[in-house]
Structures are given as structure tokens and as C-alpha cells.
Length: 261
Image 1 (spheres, one colour):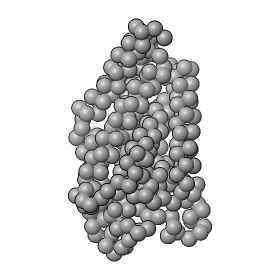
Image 2: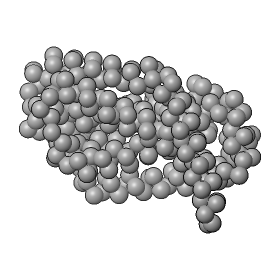
Image 3: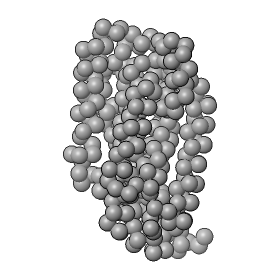
Image 4: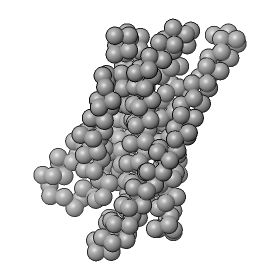
């Protein structure tokens, strides 16, 4: 790849990514404020009101135990929602055709949307973490390297899932089906508010089939130093699914499935 081509691709990627970031920043009241408000309510209700009645969870104050789960929940929904809404909008407005007829490689198109979703997911996660410090100011991160790694990998993974959802969506209703009926139940049952160690054996075995459990617990390992699952296995699965979803997304772009129809 010659120098001029690398420069052009870099400019193209920066343009698309910055466009995606400006898109959600222009409506920050709708994209960044609601997660902060929602998580504040969680902290007030579950942390301040119900938490003292529950006591400790795996040796930590209940509000402290909840923080990693609530941050991860906001990161997942933020990164997913950004990509699914943005890419479906360019499909709906037919502006996707401008990207497809341009000399922009498919991987640059995909990466631009994914980086926009990752940026929003991470920003939302940081905002929620700042909110959590008002309720538990003495919070300290146990492993900053693992925490950042899981944060980045998870936001990439769910941004890719949002992209795939947008490709197959035929209406604005379709982009809300997966978050409402799949993501939200799995997240709530993925150990955000409890440790699976308190569950009976049967339900603990059922919970082990929930992929969200591994994401949430790997992030909790980074922030608190505790986990109900194998960290190496969880990270391997996250990386594997990122590779599979990336390959599938590039295939969909190459074939024009759900785009050129």
C-alpha cells in the first residue's frame, strides 16, 4: 500500500468516524444524559434504599458490587444503540449509496461506524462511573489494564452486533426488537445485581449459558478483583465473537445484503 493510498484511507476513516461522533454529540441530551439519569435512579433505589438491607455481596458493599455491572450495562446499550440507529438511518435516507459507490473500502466503512459506537459506549461508561462516585466515593479499581481491555472489547463487540441488526432491519421498529427482547433480559440476568453464587445449583447452571454473565463478570474482575467465571475463557470468547461478527459484517457489506435491495 503506497503512501498516498494510506493517507487517503486515513482521511476517509477520520472523516467517517468524526461524523459519527458529531452525530451523537449534537444530541447529547438524548444520547449521554439519559444513561446518567437512569443509573442514578438505580444507585438511589438499589444502592441507597435496598442495598443496606441486602448487606454485602461477595465481601463488598452492595452498591460497590453493583457499579461494574451498571457501567457495563450502559456501555453495551450505548455502543449497540449508536451503531444500529446510525447505520439504519443512512439506509433509510439512501445516503448509504454514497458510501458504497465511493472508493472507500468496506472495512473502512465498517470501522468508521464501529469507532463511533465505541466512542459513545466508552463516554457513557465514564459518565456512569463518575455518577457512581457520588454514591461510593472511596471506590478503587483493582486492575486498570483488564478494566480498560474489557471496556474496549465489549464496546466493539456490541457495536458490531448493532451493525448486523441495522443491516437486516426493515423498519425503525426492527432496530428496537433485539435490545428490548434479547439484550435487556440477558443483561439483567447476567449478574449485574447479584452473584450467581447465591443461586441454587439448577439456576446457577442455567445462568452459565448466558453470554452476558461472562462480560459482566470479566469487567467486575477488573474493577473489584472478583469473578464467578474464568477470565481467560471469557476474554477468548469475546475476541472470537469480535472476529466472527467482523467477518460476517464485511461479508454483508461485500454482498450488499439488506443494503442494495
